[in-house]
Structures are given as C-alpha cells and as structure tokens.
Image (cartoon, rainbow, N blue to C red; front, side, top):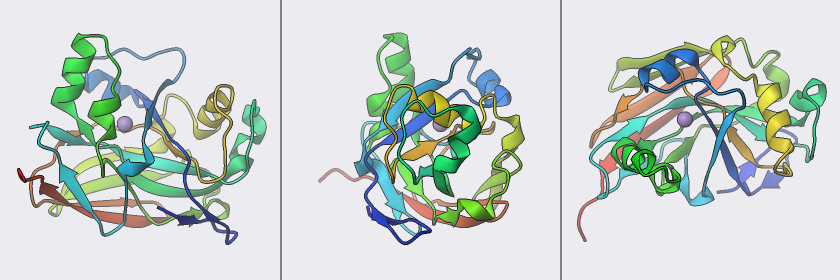
Length: 221
Ligand code: MN
C-alpha cells in the first residue's frame, strides 16, 4: 500500500507498530493487568487494507475480533525522540482496526508465545483515509466509535489512553528508528467482539475520515 502524506509525499509504510492494553476498561475486559511501559507488537505490511476493502476471516480462526484504534502516521523520521517534540513527528491520523484472531491469541498466550500470527494475517490492519495532523490539535481529545451493520459496538475517547500518543511515539523511538509512513496503532477502548462473514464495519471519529470495510470468510480452495 502506498500512502500520500498531507505534504504530498508518497510513502510505503515500512512497519506497523501496535500498542496493547492502552485503555483501562479494555485491559479489564481481557482479564489483563496494566503495565508500566507500553505493550508493543508488530504487524506485517501485508495486513494493510484500505477504506472500502475487504477483511478476510482466515480458516485458522473461528473468533476474529475487532479492535477500533486511533492510528498515528509518522511523517518526520527520528530516534530517541523526546515526548515534548513527539507529536511533531506525526504527519497524519487515521482510524484503524487491529483485527485479532482471539482464539489463536489465547493459545499463544497459554504457551507464552508471541502474538504474530493472531495479529498478523493478511487484511488484519484496515487503515482509513489520512487526516492532516494539523487538523487534529489534540489527539487525546478524540471520540472514536465502531458500528457493525449499523449497531454500535465500540465507543471511546482518546483521553482514556494509559499512554498518550506523544508518550508512545517517544517510547517506540527509543527502540525503533521511526520512518515516514510508519503506522502506530495506539490501542483499543473496551467493547471488542467477534466479526462475522458478511458484516460491514464502519468506524468514525472526531474530525477523522471514516473507515468502512466488509468481512468475508476465507473458503477452502
Ligand atoms: Mn489492539
């Protein structure tokens, strides 16, 4: 996928960085505990699907969940970015979905193994159209919502994040060089649940372009 940043640059996302357990109510619904530092995992770029696209529910899972998330798009590269200047490295924001094969993830958790498969299937990272960061004065003051076939499933406000976007950008840059086009999925509020064949997922957020995708079950070939 190629993204056009608000300044006109065309970039190919090099990495998809994701934060887990970033809203207390979601941490509680998963039976997890909050961490002192952000929980980080990655998705491959083959997980990306654009607005209007199709999410494929893979054969390996009977329980794919939606996680509605605010996505920050890196515009200015950096390493060891301090929190005070972190938002200056974000070129755009978007709505995204961190799709998760919950049954596969539960198996991985029980074996204390990584989440790469549960989080990384093709089409498991829908990404909405980009909104210029200049039009988002405070990323911690956004209300985001997800409806499935017209029924609201998730609603949250980004001021409930455990780790702010600035803190996340700073933290991630202490490990990974952030590059233009890198995508940061910032965690989901409560209300995660299953996605079924044929359902239409519609995400909205304050001042953000909406995101719509349709789910389709993968058939045996
Ligand atoms: Mn997530």
